[in-house]
Image (cartoon, rainbow, N blue to C red):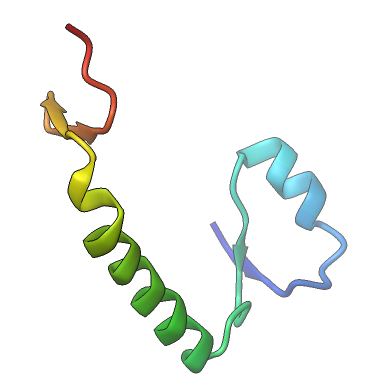
Length: 65
């Protein structure tokens, strides 16, 4: 799968066809760092209280009884 730019006209058709699009340089290094920091904070502060089940090596917050 090839990377495209955000303004590439094939973004929509690739997404519809493949279900995913690899977009080159969508976020800056600073934006990536900030996003990672926010996700880590969310994991520490919010997800720490959510029960986690592991089924077939997949972690999920939904636990069927």
